[in-house]
Image 1: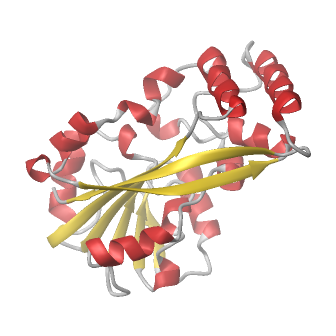
Image 2 (image 1 turned 180 degrees about the horizontal axis):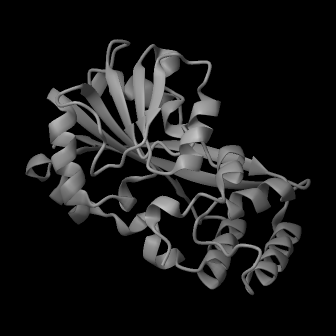
Length: 251
């Protein structure tokens, strides 16, 4: 089985182009509830291609991305090369390589479900300064419309290990066991993406659980995707609705 740290190596381009970003409202929320200022040092754990970090340099923050996958690290460097306050290091949630007590806010965007939670909690305690907050965020794709339901069914049918690795396997019990005294704040934001067929295909292929070209399910999956698009598009566009979920606490 492919290591979690290698799952996205051949999907970086699609990930950069087609994965959803995060609402700007997260910054004002963290300013109010986590004491975020321009002086806050942020560690973005599992930074991937840098999508989760993009909000913070514009706010003036120093951001250190931590990412074990080489291809993703290089993509993050390309995406944020114009922000001198962003750097990225080769590390993991369980071994970030960051100094003791060096960061004020620890972020994981669309990544926490890949972590060894016990080891990550110990590492976050080590690198966090006194009072450091941990914020976990996910863009959760909704299944309210007929199109969204059809796309979800496609993933369940053709996704190689979709059910096993779905981030929605992380629930209140897992979060309570991670945060100190089982206490955390939860906030939600609305988010959306609009795609033509090429974008929809790229969005599908950005996911680590979808078959690649050499897999026997690859072409049947794309045939079904085209059927879904043709049935549900409006003026050659389909819409993904998301709830961006944010969990904030200390460890």
